[in-house]
Image 1: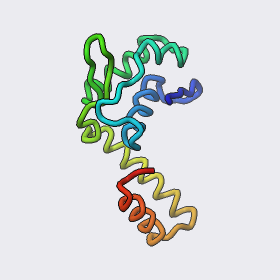
Image 2: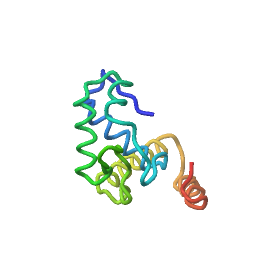
Image 3: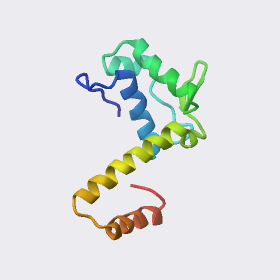
Length: 124
């Protein structure tokens, strides 16, 4: 579900945050879904516990996730209303639109795709 690129210029904790936010944006993770434990994720990714803890702490501070003592971390009810997630979606959409235009898709082609996506409720 989550991978890290050790060669990336993006800090590992930021990669984890970004991927969790992306999973929420695309609907893989929904409100109140349980996330893997910090210990499990750090073990699976062979990372320092504190690296994963920082990512989760940042997400919790931003209101994207919440923690229940002894039960774990979960996706917040209003996670998609988070400005950081919305900005990430805007940036990804913009990059996708630039790629579409440079690949020869017309505005009508893109609008048709958007209509298809929104007409089926945003599912992939």
